[in-house]
Amino acid sequence: MKKLKKLLLSLKKLDGNGNKDQIIKTICSEFNLVKDGSVFYCDEFSCRFSYSSSNSFSNTVLSLSRLQKFDDIPFLVILVTPDENKVFLANTTFLSKISHSSHALTMNNIRGSFNGSDIIKSYQGIANNRENLEELYAFHNEVGFGENLARLVEATNNISPSGSKFDVTDKARDLILNSVKRAKEFNESADFWELKNDLDQRVEKFRSQILIASHIENVNLRGRLIEYLVTEEDDETKASIVSEIHEEYDRLPKFKTANELGDYQRRFNTVITETDIKTKIVILNSNPKAYNVDKMLQFLSKEGTVLLFYFIGIDAEKIVNTLLISVFQKDLLNDTTQLMHWSGRNSRGATQFIGKTIDGLLKEPNHEIDEESSRVFLQGLIDS
Image (tube, rainbow, N blue to C red; front, top):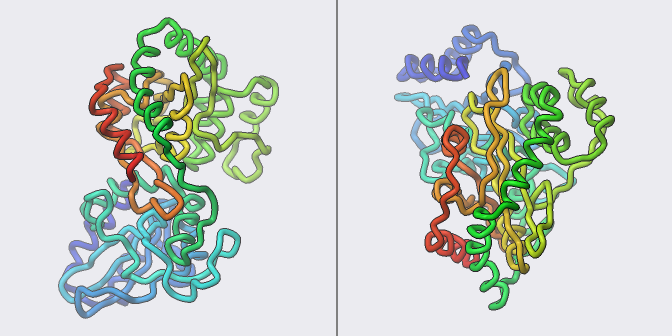
């Protein structure tokens, strides 16, 4: 994000200017920004300028439908004040609700606008300011507009668009907490390595196609396509899909990927494994989505279930490594973040991994599970 870093330096140099129109003119000239209504953008970021004579910021910023157009790149709100040019990341992940004219907002009717006061000023303990924009955007980049829309609909109008909170009975609680022991036993079995070998062979068979797909900038499309290449059985269709990859991704053929907890299920005698396949571009700062908490608890409340993740580490030119790992691996668990502002009346929300931890595990695989801390973590999810 070279342009974004340069933008922040330029805005810092303009601190104390206090003239919004002059700052807009200077920034647009320096970065050759295109004007689209009240939004200015380039290939690396988009922004909206506002002014306040104080630090308070309640102005209407933008409509949700307009934000949708720019939500796949950093969307910045640049607040010009007499002393400082404040910068907030205002992609949908960092909105608490929709305020203005939002009474008709539903999943199928994107209405309403957000105010400056609707922008979350601290996310997962990280201040939303110009020093932390890249770190924060890594959280949004893996989530996108669709999932945030469901959250905003509920937060705005008390409408639960879908889903329900999984009811954890006493029996279910025991099975969920015992899933840590099941995971550890599976890690130490020959079945673990059979599953790893199975997935590795699938990756190797379509290695060149996976590398082509890894260059897709749209994170959600990239992940779904690579998941499809690894899990589906129709080799001819997979080859034809990848051969048609080009810049206009909307022309890609339709391909099926289920919106389940995992992407690949295998049974080993009394064990049922669900494996979620994740691509980790190791040269990019990203925090991959982990799992829907209610789906995870519901799955682990069944006898014999084991949840794993299979990470495909890719750099600019090659697949650097693959990693099959339990959801309870100690480093991964320590850096699993529950997105609390996603939790609503009918959901425990979702979780997200810290990408740097995955990068480290791809370099030096480690399968250690701390049973006690894993059970404490699960109890926290149950109680949330």
